[in-house]
Image 1 (cartoon, rainbow, N blue to C red):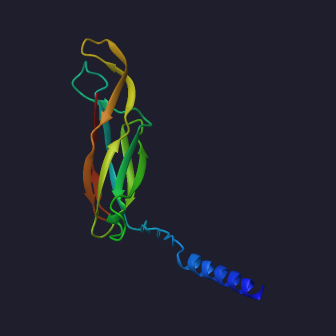
Image 2: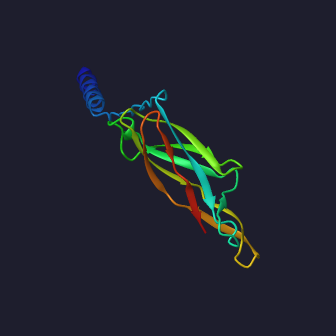
Image 3: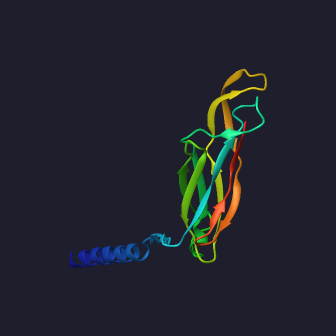
Length: 157
């Protein structure tokens, strides 16, 4: 009986040692801190051909969102290059948008683009076509701390 108890305890101890040494270790990611005290400004106008009967483009509708996307490795070289911080601004009634984004003394690269939108469009003959989809171009930029980067966002239908 004592022999069976000894063997059972030995087996349990062996299993416990094996299971404790073969645990999967989970690594938690470290948050990447972005210094918000160093900033730059990105601004411009969102422009779309809403009225084809004249030779000038109009502003995108107020409330249209514009995005600036910055890779986290622009702020911290140890950050993965496939992770991004996205900043959002809204087009005003005058077509203008403005961002204040974190930068560095060496500068950051970014991509800027607008959200797609649907609205009516006046055609060359003066008639109106409803539910036209407008898609923005994407632009790449570079901005250094305290610098102002200006970029109009153009849309096409």
